[in-house]
Length: 309
Ligand SMILES: NC(=O)c1ccc[n+]([C@@H]2O[C@H](COP(=O)([O-])OP(=O)(O)OC[C@H]3O[C@@H](n4cnc5c(N)ncnc54)[C@H](O)[C@@H]3O)[C@@H](O)[C@H]2O)c1
Ligand SMILES: O=C(O)C(=O)C[C@]1(C(=O)O)C=C[C@@H](O)C=C1
Image 1 (cartoon, protein in one colour):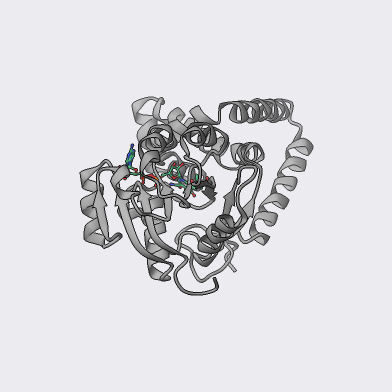
Image 2 (tube, rainbow, N blue to C red; image 1 turned 60 degrees about the horizontal axis):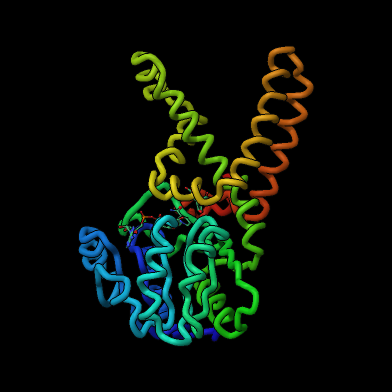
């Protein structure tokens, strides 16, 4: 499967940022035969049709998945259980069912009970995205050089798994398999906690006196500006992530609060050595992220690794 079509018919449920990125990525590379698009928003469907993202457009996921040999759920994760229940009787035997949800254990609990025998459910999560939403926000280049985590369930058949891995690899992604619980723990610290912190900081600025608030926006310094990008992310998507990765996020938040108190004390008592020691370690982490080629902001420029080199 090094070239040519990997799946004959793909159904995409949700044609926002992620759904439209997948549609573009597979289209541009000729990896699927036809694409059936489903979305509950008329506006999203109409825009997707204008952009030529699919071959058919439907409000009903059940209609879109008929005859599909790959179904990808790309909606906010709070909708997955109802969508899985609705499409289950219409899934083709032998079809692969996957998703792009940012949390894996809760998604598995919501979807798995509805998956009929003979359908291969392979949960997934591309570690790639932006703060933007909707069909215009997507890009066929989004997955290039980014990790795409799969969390296969015990007993997953090797052929459908290999086929799915081939599809995402040929979209430019680096596919890795992880246990779902481990995925959720790692993502709680690398993605979910940073978003929570960004939402908090920008919320704090919002609560300032009117004049101060205006000046915070007017004189936005680099640090705050970067947080506003993240805090501008899709509110429904992020509500669902926090509600569905509760335990891991709360555990990381507890550790974060302790580390913050340590810094608070060091500042209060003028312990510069403690501050410098930590900031030196964190610089090393930043280097590691750059060396792993994961520091490039999207859209990826030709300048390479986000290190200005
Ligand atoms: N945006 C990111 O950075 C990113 C990255 C990786 C994974 N994800 C995951 O991708 C998923 C989608 O995120 P997005 O950024 O594409 O969001 P989005 O808001 O851009 O798109 C979601 C689409 O789903 C549609 N939708 C919502 N509920 C629906 C339902 N019940 N039935 C049919 N359609 C429905 C919406 O109309 C919208 O078009 C989420 O589960 C998120 O966790 C997002
Ligand atoms: O870069 C961004 O804007 C993102 O928020 C993308 C990001 C992330 O945290 O890296 C957000 C959530 C997804 O599950 C995966 C990727």
